[in-house]
Amino acid sequence: MRRIGLIAAFAVCIGLIAAPANAAPELVGFQLNLLAPGCLTGADPASQPADTEFHVAHGFGLDPGTETAVGHWKFDLWVDGVKQHRYVEIAVLPGGNMSRRYVSSFPDGLSAGVHEIRAVWTDPDGVSVGPFGPLDCTWDVAFN
Image (tube, rainbow, N blue to C red; front, top):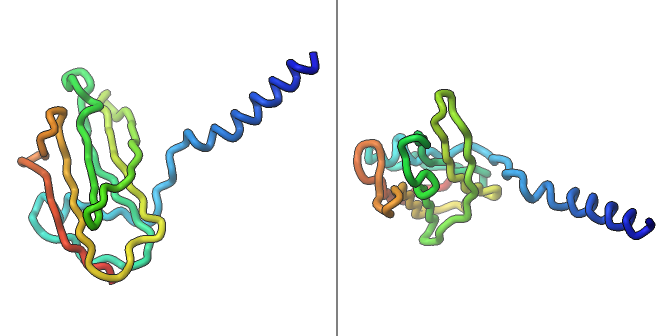
């Protein structure tokens, strides 16, 4: 009987420890939007404050009834040549479409200076794709 009590207590403790690991991280700071004025217009994103927390969140809105490879559409982000860690937020939108956003957080921001930022949206075949053509954009963004 005591063994069952210990096993149950252990299971509860593991559940309390593991639960926060499954939660999506909080978005930090402002969102650095790379679509507008960036990739869609060809303009460089404006200079940004250095050492200030921010996040990048981009992805796709898809109709799961017509898209055969919903999980294969993706967004990748590189900063100074290093692919950034991201997590995926998935939500069902009104009307049944699905939103899939890839989020990278920068809780310490980026140091002062110019940083190369590359954003790539790809379809299930690995082809760069966007609403008006390929979206594979690279900018030199000043952080002051």
